[in-house]
Image 1 (tube, one colour):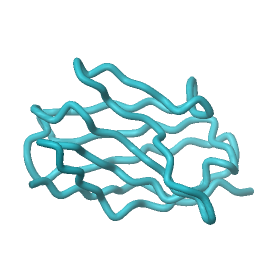
Image 2 (spheres, rainbow, N blue to C red):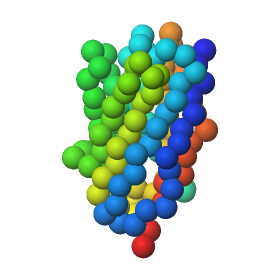
Image 3 (cartoon, rainbow, N blue to C red):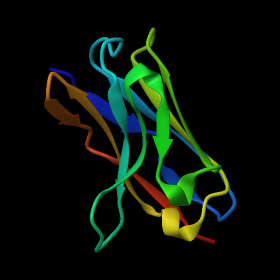
Image 4 (spheres, helix red, strand yellow):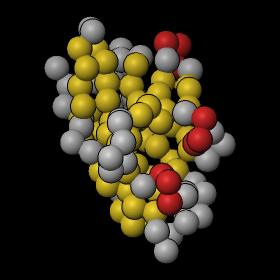
Length: 115
């Protein structure tokens, strides 16, 4: 079992940056599939960025070149650096992990992009 806690959300102006953090309650060294989803009001949850096997990364098309996912296995942390933020990035961002076919989710952190 693993518990995930997100932090780093907030209000930012268009064009600004935020760095989201996801703290895991145990070692993530063996967890290949981790990443971030987001859910905007009235919309379905969508995958934003994730690690695949071999620790490769993949991104949703609208965030490519603006968002960067990274991880620090020694600290049991996953990050999402978000640059050039747009109003349409406004959503609750969720960290997730899949370990032994079980999905784990954090409670989310709100990101609001507005002037």
